[in-house]
Image 1 (cartoon, rainbow, N blue to C red):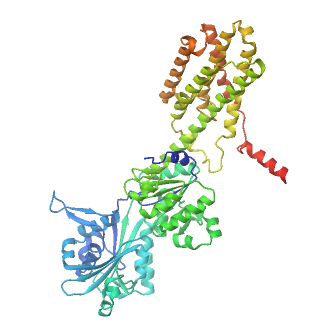
Image 2: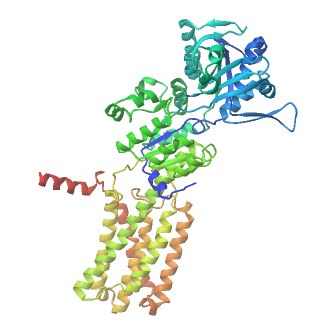
Image 3: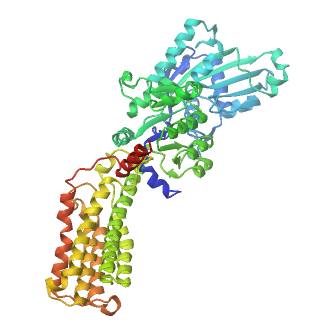
Length: 601
């Protein structure tokens, strides 16, 4: 859904796309596929081997430290419905179906004293609870595995024994986290501690922040969020179009690398992408010079915050890139506004993100982002086609009338005829060229960029060739037409007018392709173009043959119509020959600026 029309054209010039991972590159349908108690891997079918104490602590950590909910389905007493974020729903579903958690019972047994909600800076959420039966107070944390494990000094084994977390154990925990991340799993850790009486007397711990030190590690879960079908092809298409894809995610660096490799953003051989992966904190702490030097090499930013995303967009824009950004959260609003094109998510996106964006991706799919890029290129290209076509009309008309007025004191094209030409060329011509659909050749081109001129050297070559041909033909008819074709002045003026209009109609075919020689390729697919050409020709016949008084024309015979069509049709071979001439990519006016600068020096 396009909220700002100009964004379509801008997207055609995009050089970099900064995309989220969850829900955009992936399906955002998470399931728990791995489970560890402490350092021990637990099979899904072997949950009975876990002690009741550890299970109870997991029930507390999942059921009370969550923003989701569990409902019993009305259709069946044995089935459940889950609400919340995809991560919360996956963990709740796993706890209820695999760990036999009764969420209502857990809530009845405990009072919640304080909640620390999840945020993108801390990457974790916490809760302080009181056991109604014995009055003991417990704290639970859940979040990014490496951050939770740093808070822990001990860990539980499957029998419920508490063991000290030695250096070797920490290394083992890191290996578990990295192993899950390498398998494209999001690793979530759980930690617990019973608050001591001394801590209970501390008002800040009771009613302020949840304590964050000396916790006991409960274990880890690995959540699988598969890549969307077709996302790798979409990323490849964008890269072939010369657009850099940068993935910005809150996941740890190992998960980010695995997903980016799976999507085609990184190469399987990471040595090829040296310096392409960075963490948000490292990027944030770089000096301005180092950040500007490195920003173009980065393809993946892990453990990033919304500020890191905004900082990257600002750096890329300073480097001259045209930046598109995807976002779904309220915190993404600054980056969406800062970007040249803000793309919000229609399903997971918040209203704040949507209001800050230019285009809403209704299916939250990166393939749709690639489609926006393709159609943006098409819109930009169609604008160029129409500008080339319209400039040809205006240059020819201006030169013909000016030369005729200066030399003979009268103009061959009357005011009504010029208005007619502008009417059919500005409306029907624009509609015909604007209906061209994207082609594979278009998406394979390099992006235009921020400073590239709208009128390229190719366009100047095409329009000048056609304009010069039309001027030569029409001035010849103006000064020699009466004697060449043995007609009176009024018929000769009608020949000039009819030839001029038909030249524009035939030149519309040339304008369909700025560079390709075969201007008829794919024309059968654009039925609207052919219909508009047909309507234009019918209106021109009516103008010449039946509206003589209004248009100041004279009826033409079949031979005279054939002459006009012959002159107009010659624009096709001329267009073909002109496209054999190569032109430099550097804008022609840049040479004039260079010469002026050299002269001044």
